[in-house]
Length: 442
Image 1 (cartoon, rainbow, N blue to C red):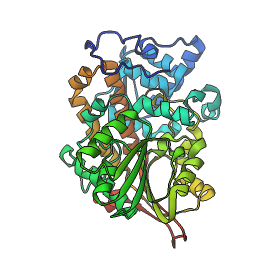
Image 2 (image 1 turned 45 degrees about the vertical axis):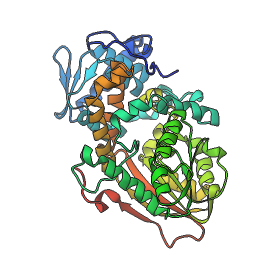
Image 3 (image 1 turned 60 degrees about the vertical axis):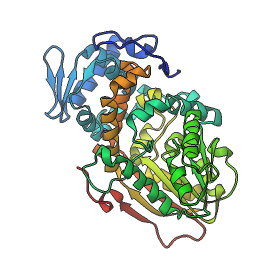
């Protein structure tokens, strides 16, 4: 399925009462058909789950569910149950896009759901997951050709769109704040804190040969080159490459930075340091060994690798790794979040790298996402002017809120790893960078 958005074309704004554009959003415009039996089972399961949660669920018609907490309004219960019965979590997200349910505090409601992700579905149905859960399509496998398409569908949407809600550094990964509360005015500094920390871990300085896997819009490469490093940075997004090149040229360091439209598997050369920031999430489980083997192969003996990765609990990764979700369909096709255990075992079994340290700082990502979401909401008119309609805005708002809720609930975390190549370190260390850098953020 192609991403259902027309890029850079102006569209008429619609009121919330108007229908979803069926040409752009065929699976959102009309709820799927469900047999009576399937719809009845879905309603029973969903009502049972909501009744046990610390939520206040108001259904059209006056009935209520939940134990009290954040409010969730279901405007069209029949469509809501049908979508979930046919499409599971894909249907849950599409129902929000279709305005069939809403929440005054969307993050709070989704945080409750994320915190109970493991027990929302009854045990007997969990064991039958392979029967009822949607499976990831083969077309989203992250082969070299598939990865290019998957990356393009997200990152080639529009540089102007991302610039509307990211800070001036155009960093699209978790910042690290020096204290809380996090504010928009502090975000760019916090993003530089994150980048500098990665460059410090890998000891990047004058003359360092640095490979970056996943360019983004070039901020890490720019800061590394400013230290005197010679940087080769790889991306599969043509939009990102073009803007990153322009930013590098504007910074006057084009002689020290090479930006290549290149799959990580095609990388060549030997480097003193390798950095990869939140790129492993797009690799796919079957290619994790190749990804880490590439880090190992490209690194000179005695070199250092810094990796920033979003992680999820290992048991949930195992349970859901083949499931096709709303995020796969609309935001990150082919993606899968690893667990700490999966990273550790892949590195140990497939490389000569040694884990020196790992720092977790999930609450910093929750705050980063909050700032992005608030900025995106504030600039809704400018999003419209770029040609993205109201359904797209609801989709993107749901994505940012859904992600933030994952970190606030503790279901998701983000890690910075340091790996070395050569003699094993005396022992790895694990730290909570959230506490280390000052403040829980709650």
